Every structure is written in structure tokens, then in C-alpha cells.
Amino acid sequence: MVFPRKKAALALASATLALAQAFATPALAQTAPPHVLPNGQVPPNLAAARTHMLEAPENMLTFHTMDQLFQTRPVPRSGPITALPRVDQALPDAVLGTTKMTEDQWEDRTFTNALLVMRDGKIVHESYRNNTDASTHYISFSMAKSITSIMVGIAVNQGFIKSIDQPATDYVPELKGSGYDGVTIRQLLQMRSGVDYEERYDFGATPSVAAKIFLNAVVANTERFADTAPRLGRKWKPGSHFNYSTLDTSVLGWILERATKQPLATYMTNTLWQPMGMESYGFWLADGAPGVGRELNGMGYNATLRDFARLGQMMLDEGKFNGRQILPADWVHQATAMVPNADPGTPPPPASVTDPFARSGYGFQWWKIDDTGAYTALGLQGQFIYVHPATRTVIVKLSFFPPEGSDLGNRALEETLAYFKTLVNWSATAPKP
Image (tube, rainbow, N blue to C red; front, side):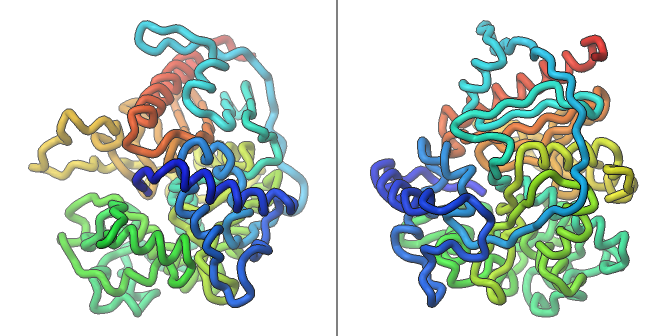
């Protein structure tokens, strides 16, 4: 999700007021924060804080205090914690162009809240900044899309979803007659629905469709994120064009809810979070009160640094973790088999487009990162679960990049990917501990 920059003064005033209220309560996953009105309406100050939560410098705090800004759906843990062995090592310096800096300096320069590097299943580096620690829960943003893909794979394996080549309307008949009529689950996973939707957040007097969804579902909770889906038409033949769409992922969440006959948080608790032996609870942001709102499965999962790393390690180990086959190995292979974003005959992005993922590939809600077989879950403003199978490296970086499109945000992305390359090269050549 990409949002435009707002006026910093208004953002600071709004977010400061809401966060001042928030920090008066413990940072626990709640069903409804205490400052939501009894009738379910969102107070103006809280709505303003949600609207501006992505802006710098407030995002240094908001990105790890989302349970104080939103209604949530807990995903509890239980049982023994699956240990992550560690062999702490000094990481190599970062070389960015002609500039050399320590890893610690690179973390500061790339707006890092937390960083974890694993090699061959062992933690070699773990660090926290900005008043965070191992118990802090960080927003995933669109890394939640990759988690949704994992849940679809589990549901297919358990028989709740018969085939990903079924049409979405088999599970959500409300989509009949819309642009989603005839779209398969596979096409949703690949973001090739063909629906007339653009991930463009234009606010103002005539907001775009995506902006309206953000304002109504995420900020005000007056509708559900997926409610717009049955009202949209078709732009392309399903399967023919890649079009990045949080709405497609939201429809996948709707399908999971219908197929499993349970809320996504409950299904995730029983089939993923608890079987993996996670260290802490997780939680979904929700777009309304219990019984009305749904999990914001396209952008709203929150977890600790190590538990995000456990997800990455499970993917690296072809779906196996905690002595169990959590996700079928075949699903991992399918999900990370990348299809080029640019369709045949489509001209490449112009040189002015600096986002490296515009020239990349996409699997089942996972991004191709380069030509080495690496892939990543990718979240707005610098959230990564990066997996490099060739060197058995997993990197989780949780960041607070400036808003997308800014020069600083573009630089932070480029310098993050550059240092990831340094780390995998180091993993390939450094002696095993």
C-alpha cells in the first residue's frame, strides 16, 4: 500500500495525542482499544492518527504500537517454544558506492527498528532500536500477503479449498456479476485477477478507489476492506496481466474465512502459529468490531522479530518447522516459482521508475528479489522476510522508511537490498561457526 505524504504538523499533533492516550495502557493485543467509542465509531483524534501513521518521524513509533491504534484479533501461542539456536557473529561492513560503513551505521542509515540474520538455521545477529526489544510486536504491512499465501496453502492441504483453480465465487458468491466473477484462486494469488482496480492512493476532493477503501475501512471502520470487491468491473482478461492489488489479497482472506468456516485469526492460531511453537502471540489489525470487522489480511499482521524469522526459516526448510510439515513442500515450490511482472509485449518501466520490484517477478504473494533464487515477503516502508536458499540465509528487517516515493525512502530501499547481497555473499564464504 502506498500513501501520499501529508502535512507534518498535523500528523505530529494527531499522532502524538493518540499515542499519549495509548501509552497509558499496556501494549497487549486487544479486541478493541479503550479509546474506541461504545457505538463503534472512531474518535476524530484516533482517525487522524491512523490517517498519518505512515509519516516520518512518527512512524518510528507507530510501526510497533499498532495495537494502540486499531482493533485487533489475537493469534495466541501455546506449548513449548521452538528454540532458535544462536552463534552470534560480527557482520561485515556495508559498502554503498564509494562509502564504507559498519553494519550498525547501516542500520541507522536505513531506518531500522529491528534486524535479525540467520544462517543455516542459527541466529548470527539480532538487534533492536528505538525503544524496542524481543517482546515488541511490529507491523508487517504487506508481508501479511505472504502469510495469507501460507494460510491458503494449508487450507488446500487440509481439503478446505479443493483446488486453487476453482473460481473465487465458489466460496464467495457475493462476487458473482463483478470483475471477480470467473477469477480463480490461483489468479488472485498471482495478482492477475484482471479487476479494474489500481493501488493508487489519491486523496482530496475525488479520492481514488484505493483511497476510499483506506479511509472507510482502515481509518473509519465504516465498511469492510473487501466490501468494494463486488462493485468493481473487469479491466483485463483474468490471468493476463500482473496488477499489484491489496484488494485481491483481501478477497483471498474472505475465501479462507468462508472455506474454513472460522475467522482467519482462529484458523491461523490452530494451523500455523501454535504448531510452529512461536515465541509470542501475534495479532491482526481489524477493520471493525468483533462480529462485524474482518482481519486486514492484506496489510495488518503484527509479530515479534524472531517469530517473523521463524516463518522465513519454515519457508527455507520447504515448509518444515518444529519437527512438523507445517506447509507442503510442493506449495513452497509453487509459491516461490516467480512469474515475470511484465507481460510479453509490455515495454519495461521507464528509467525514472526507481523501485527495483517494478522489474521483478511475483509468485503466490512472494516477490522475486534477484536472479539467485532469493525471494522475499515485502511490506510497506521497509519490512522484509528475505530468504536466500542457496546460502541458507534468512534476514528479517523491520524498518520505518520515509513514505514511499520520497528520495530518502528510495535510497533506503536500494541500500537495504545492496547490503542483503553483501550478507548472502558473506554467508556463502564465511567459515561455519
